[in-house]
Amino acid sequence: MAAFWNQLKDKIFGKRLQFAVGYQLPGEMNRYDMVDLIGQYRKYVSEVFFAMPGDASGRVPVGSRKGMATEEAKERLFADLDRLNAMGLPGVILFNSSCYGSGYGSGELLTHVRQGIEEAGKHIRLRAATVISLPVAAEIKASFPEIKIRSSINMHIGTIPQMELASNYFDGYYLNRDYNRDLDHIRSVRAWCDEHGKSLHMLANSGCIYQCPHHHYHENVVAHIDEIVSKESAYKGTLAPCFRMLTDPSVQYWVLRNTWIRPEDIRHYVDLFDTIKLATRESAEPEYVLLAYTMEKWPANLLDILEPGHANVEGMPFIANARFPEDWFEHTTHCGHHCDTCGYCKTVFEKVARTQQGFSMLS
Image (cartoon, rainbow, N blue to C red; front, top):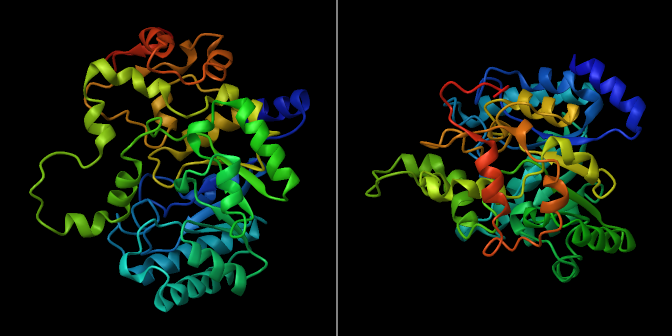
């Protein structure tokens, strides 16, 4: 059914959406073999992004959840990169940790980066590297001029002055997700990028809270989770501020104020970005994500296709994506995100939120 719909959609709408998809080891977060899954959606996937095992990259290190040694995880990753390469897919390697501690800019770190690129490059053509560290960006540009350097979305670069300040280091930018619903702003940034020979990329399904003040903190917690859990903690409760906050029913409607784009609206962005990134590195159901965004339709719980999704927050209702009002896209892309004075999202939340127990997609 999905294949039929996609073929029909291509004939009707013409230009096909192209997505960047995040890699995860088979069985690490779910039941899927990620390469097999990507193969099923190959014509909609333009590149695959991945981090090297053992590296902090704003997510739990590859192989960590399976208790795999770094070399064992590398062996499986490289085998999968070989398979992706055989499909003709390029790779985007991530060196996007925001915390290298005392090793920041050290010869040891830069050697580690070069070795990672050399190792991965034996198994897949590397199109780009996504980084935060300016010394890392400079090192890759000098040592591997054929690899494009992109700013990580976790740099929160979203304005033309920011892009100008970083232009000597980066060939492209992942737009600060907080601007995802401001089409006029995106068009102005796109024009600047075109004029200056820079690429522009977006993350479509982030579940992060809009303008979250804890974002950098949370990314560091996740990246260093192995070290954290190895120590006895005096802090009780989750270390994720958003998961803790959203247990309060009075603020749960905030999940609608965020930066995600519904699959039904993703086509509005196809001419504004070079690639549309789908967060799947830690998704429990990456097939849901790929199915929803390639079909441009999702009839179930919206939270299930976001990362983080917050669907498992205690007391969080089912967000019925099919029940969103027809004016959702038009309203939220022209509202100016004046959340302190606007009650639109709260009103919509009351229409789309359903209790998890006994929920029917037809209700």
